[in-house]
Length: 534
Picture (cartoon, rainbow, N blue to C red):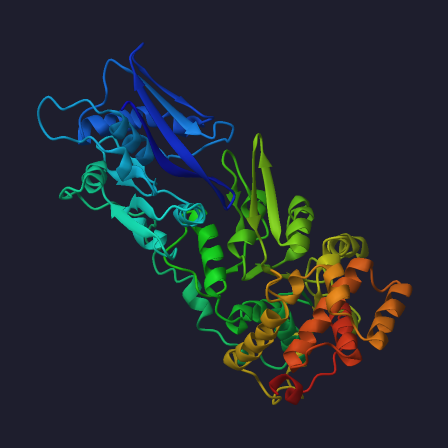
C-alpha cells in the first residue's frame, strides 16, 4: 500500500478540528509536496520530518514523489505539532521491504482510533507543543481513544477521561510501540515550562492573604461577596490608600474550587499559551499592568491568535487596577467580554473565539493625583477641574454600564474607629456562603448551560425568574428617572438573584431588589453581620 492516513488536530481558538494526514507515495518526479493550507511553520515540516526519519527510523522514500495532504483542505493549519502524524503516516505508506537492518514499516491498522501530537527534531526526538489538552479534548469528542504525545505532556493529556495516553520521547519509540515491539531507550524530553525567576512566588502569595485582614468595610465586603456569588463585574473607586487593591487581591480567596468541567476549560486555555503546570483547580487571578497592550489583555498578536489575560482568568478574577490609565482601545475592547463572556479575534483568514467568563474587577482613583474625595470636599486634590473631568470620563459610558456592582471606598482612616471592632469574616466563612449560593444557581439552571446568575440572558430572566411586581416597579421608576438603562435593569435583576441566593431565598423579594439597585449605584446598603453570616 502506498497510501496511509494518520490523525492530528488543528485548533481554532479552543475549538479542535480532527485532521486526516494522508500520505501518498508514488512514482513520478521525486519531491515532497505538502498541501492543505499549511502555514510557514508547517511547510517547514517537510524538512524536519525527512531528517527525523532518516536519522531515527531509516529511511525516507527516496526517488519517489511524496504527497502529504492535510484534510479538510479548506481549513487553515498552523503549528509544528503535525510533525509526528506526518512522520507516522509516511512510515505507514512506505511499505518497501528493508534491504538490511531493522524493519520500521507500520501497518495502517495500528493508526486506527489514534491521534498523534508532537514536534520532531532533526535527530528524531520529540519536543513539547502548546495546546495539547484542548486537542485531546477535541479528539475524544470525535471518537478518538488513543493519543501519542511528548512525554512531558502525558499528564496533561491524561486529564481527559477515557483516553489511553502514550508519552513518548522519540519517533523510534512511537514506531516500536505501533509495531508491538520493545520500546528502545531515549533521552528524556525537555519540558516547556521554565524555572521560576529567583525567589518569585506568584500565585502562592495569594494563598497567604485572608478577607479577615480587611479592617472595617463591612459594606464593601458584603458587595464583594454578592459579586462572587453571582460572578458579577465589580468597580471599586476611591482615593488612594482606601484599600481597593487590598480587597481585590482577596476576592479569589472567597471563591469556591472549580468544578471538574470548569477546571478542564481553564486548563485548556492555559495549555494554549504553554503556561500549564497541572490541572487548574482554583479560580485563576490575573492583574495586568495598566500599560499592557490590547493583544496581551484581550488576545491576538501576530500570526496565530493567542488568548489574552481575560481568557486566562476564565472562571476566575481579572483585576484591572488604575483602570482609567488603561489605553482607550483596551477599554473599548472590553465591551465584548464584559457582555458576552467570550472574546472573538480575527487575523487575516484566521479567526478564533476564546472563553472569557471572568469576574472583572476594576479599581480607579477619582482623579490623577488620587487625593480627591467628594465627601471631604476634595480639598486635598491638586488636579485642575478639566484634568479631573477628562480622567473621570473614562469611568463612564458603555463599558462602565456593563459593570454590575459599584462601591466607593472611604479613606482607610474612616474605616477605623467606630468600625474597628466590627465583626470580621474569614475567607473560609465567606467562601462557604458563596459556594452555597452557587449551588442554588446550579440547581436553578440545571440543563440550561448557565453557570452563574451573571451569565443568564435578559429574556430568560424575565421569562423564567421574574421579579415581584413591587420590585419591578422599583426598577421601572429608576429607569424613568434616568438612573438605569435597559442593560442596567437586566444587570440589577441578576444581582438581585445573587442577593437572594446569598440569603438562602429561591427568588428575590422587593428588599433584595432595592439592595441590588443600591449596589449598582454605590449607595449605602443596610447590611448587618447577622445577615451576612447567617
